[in-house]
Amino acid sequence: MKRPQLWSFLRPWLLVLLLGVAASGCGGSKTATVRGKVTFNGTPLTMGNVILMSEDGKTTARGMIQPDGTFEVAKAPTGKVKAGVSNPPPAGAPGGPPLGGAKDDPENKQAAELAGKYVPSPDIFNDPLKSGLTYEIPSGGTKLDIDLKGSMPGGSTGSGKGRVLD
Image (cartoon, rainbow, N blue to C red; front, side, top):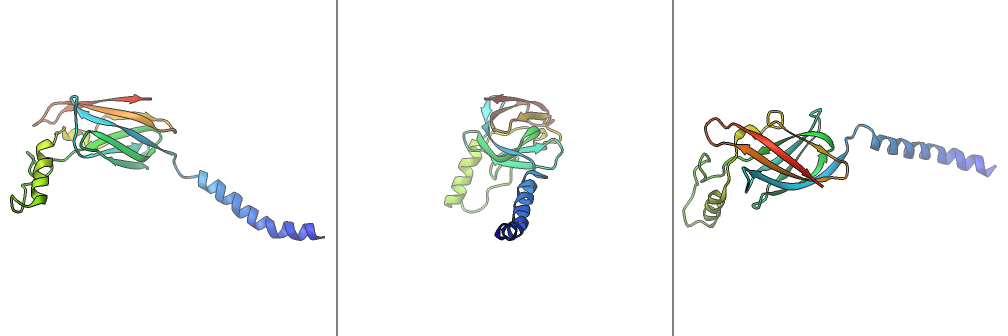
């Protein structure tokens, strides 16, 4: 008679465990890590963010662009995604806010150095819904190089060309 008592004790816990495992696979979208490089007409961007949005618009992930143009997006949505590249001008760069503070201030010097290395890109790429950039992200992650094409400034027109590299 010990066996039925043990089973009646374990049954609710087993049910909770099974429901927890089932719930973890439901409702959540799959994600992957995406690494790559962003360029504008072949020149690496030096700052900004890459935005990846699931096709249904429910999942969005961002990754910061490093000074060499590389980026990493952790927990990027998988499947077909829309991409955007946000690259606003920093303080001191053309189109950006003016530098503030004293010229000999170390923070001001660093900001001026960043502004001098800034590579602008057309605003059309900022919004994943309007950029025209689409990619397929496999569940195992991928290397994704994004080469933005277009002209600056004024009309801010351009077209995006991306390359998924395995």
